[in-house]
Picture: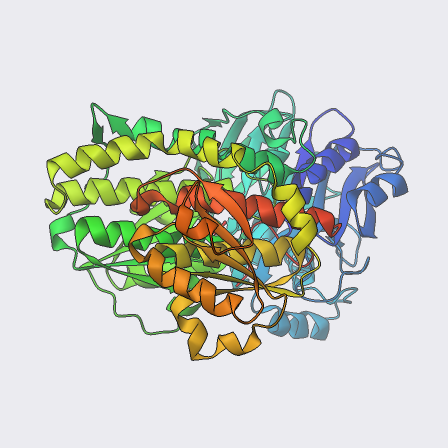
Length: 605
Ligand code: F6R
């Protein structure tokens, strides 16, 4: 997904922009570019491909001297990944350059209008209309020109704009796309992601929708949508850039998988006080709620599918899980008695934001479970529960998913207690189980040293089935997604009982079937499904409690987890399956942290 950065100060801008863009590489991109103001002119460099190519082309920025500039990594939406479509885009008179994150929905009509007025377009992008609009409206006042131009835009944008007439100034604007200012001494920055700022400054301002800001080396001034100067709180970023680096692991994904016990502990610890789940500021009137809807995308949605079991069991409120990309088109049955739970690691997923807005407009209150502080979803939510997983860099989520699950468990316990549907003794027992999750997760990571060997057996598979029932099925959904996205092996999750209704036709000699067998209440049923697929020649890899004799007698291979209460088992059961996907992808030589065609944060619908 696109990323933007900007710098104005006394140092050479280009090397700082290149470094900022490198920090954004994890988001996924296909081209990059920078523009720097030098000697009263905008100098530009763009490449299709990697930041390393841009660094080479500019001799690490030396070929673009100047102390004010903007940069961009592009993930193609309108127009192919080419040099011409890469940002920054410049005006016909060469005075202005623009970088943009987001999508301008009315770009086609604006393009037509601007072409009729004589503006020449160099790219196929939606963004280019912005720079021509700014040129059209510019009468010596950049702020006025940017405000007039952005008032013509429909859609989402985080914009960074420079003009050669104001050589040490940058103008930025935000609407529905993240934009953060970095406050330095004698220098200032902006970026679409705090990761690109922290090596230079920890003091940041999160812009809100409709706001603008003007940056110069001397300071920053934020304006509201009417152009009035406003004061904004400066926040301090507490995590370290080291925390976002690989720390000795071959891949961010491996590092993040091993961090999960610690991350889950960070989710739990601040919320358990004096033996009670305490969710600060959560004054939801649960007695008024007759339905809970969980919405999210991808893995976050699958975390919701697992969490549903715990919430329904402990609160006896019906929980519906809805893909965010579908929900808003379903004329959803949502009103003031619905509690919406929104799950998002990034807090910037466009489909999830849209679904949330739709439900809020129908009267639902939204509880967001989010990792990134100050993100759009966190801000829009009526209540927010941060997962405190730390930055997640690998595109495929791992600790994002397990901490989302944990936050749902916390909510289930909290709501069950509050509603009186969870008795005191059981409540205390479950709190104690929840507190032991990090330890059990660590055991699950430690008790499967044979995963790299298993990966050598399964990595040549054309396809794999992941089967399970009930809570096991919800984990199978996430396990199959992990396998697909990083190893590129087709993988399908199936409710085990459904096999005989059609899919078993695909099971043949040697077909790999991963059978999730951790829900003991329905173990016998899953066992009979294992026997069915074995009878047709499948190779079965079972995930089970260590030492479970029933499973040991019928599968070919095993992944083990320690004994966990079924209600919370998903957070442990997924771990060896994430590892399996990782080692299979490694065997297949895949680009694990940046799988093809994927982006970390999907900020377009
Ligand atoms: C898969 C993955 C994605 C995300 C999805 C939602 O490994 O990471 O499926 O879970 O794009 O992202 P967030 O949680 O940022 O809203």
